[in-house]
Image 1 (tube, one colour):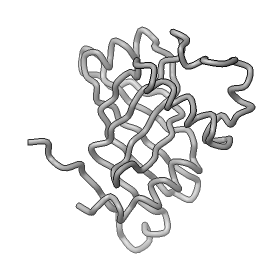
Image 2 (cartoon, one colour):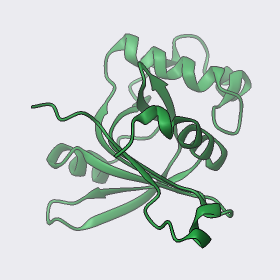
Image 3 (cartoon, one colour):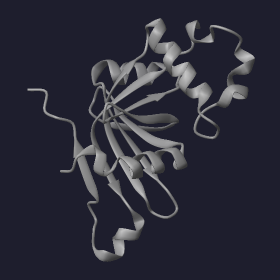
Image 4 (cartoon, rainbow, N blue to C red):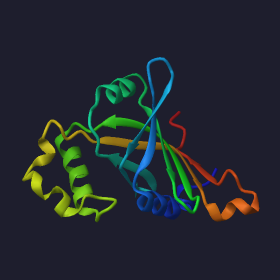
Length: 165
């Protein structure tokens, strides 16, 4: 296990360049379900943190209500990969929703929406009941660089959040 600082730069580079990731949740019967999401991950206080603009679909809502854990998988054509295991929660408070809105509006496209991508929504759009971002709190991050595969590294580098106990 490594400190997050040791893989932070590659983590942020790969997730921002790849933009979209495959996210897997688990249904009530323990079966995985995949979908594509568009999160933005940042480093805050030396730890990874992410948000995704998404809809509160019945399937996603049911899955996360029963098991808030999800996994994000990023892959690039150079075979750089990132796996992010998270605890997800809906952002429902006004300051939190506004923070996510501003992050996606201030981040240039394609990772963010950019100011033009959110301009048509008008002021205070983060108050809309259909604006339902997810907060992604990683507890495990694995970064593997394609250039390392020929040398036999198949595990890359792994960070784990400190144990809460």
